[in-house]
Image 1 (spheres, rainbow, N blue to C red):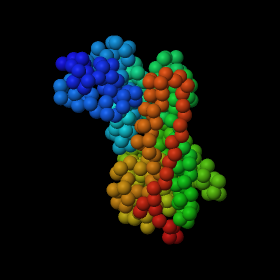
Image 2 (image 1 turned 120 degrees about the vertical axis):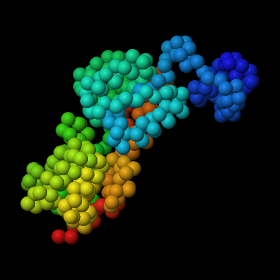
Image 3 (image 1 turned 180 degrees about the vertical axis):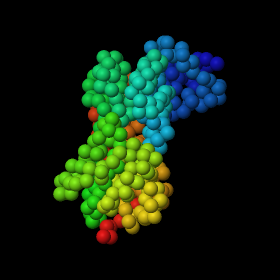
Image 4 (image 1 turned 45 degrees about the vertical axis):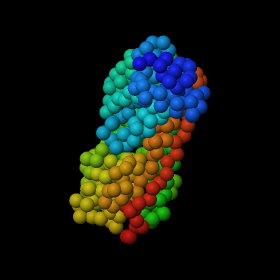
Length: 334
């Protein structure tokens, strides 16, 4: 089956068939529907390899994430893949497991596969690798780890505002002894969240006197469990805890319950990310929402500006956060 037969059945030119298949905006909806009906009726499959050779483009968009097992990332992957598909791109996905060497390998393999652009949605990125990528003529978009430039875009998440909103929420409930379960120090996003927490407490006149009130939860459930146990062992335990991500907060919920305490009656808990599971914990978790679908759509939008429109200047859209109040926080009862 050839593209000419599809064009004949749809009563359009072969060029129009090609544009419709690639979701070109120049093809109106009625014509596109006629083309796709002919494609289905004739069981036509485009020769992607031949198309790539002819155009010099692969129509592949690369997506690299930190940890595909973290519930934060599957929704981001789905949103990116859907946005790419609507624009006629396939998505090639890789997970780094927070390893710099794996990040470098994933990028190299995507470039070897001639990806037209790569979205690197990781929390860490080696500076030397960023510098190397800037010398290549491949559109890239990062998540808060690089400055925008030629063919380089960066999504900037307002972590500080999200953390500040969460801290102010706890203070408004009367909490003054607030602890923080931080993420790994090698992750920029984790460092920004911890620094924002300390600054917000300081601005409220609540500077932490015991440094053990800030402890590393590793951005994992078991890490949050262990970190919360350390907090509960203090002579003066916290009345509220803010976690650097939801997985850490979920581990903290389990540690508090194992200690015979209740959330939020004895200790209030706040997470960060608002993964789907956060609404179904016991009790449902108050958390700061980081919109994965918006991140995914903005990431592909930035790539498309460079891949399809030929715009070389990178963008830096800001991603806002929002506090979602559920049942894991309550007024201080002391």
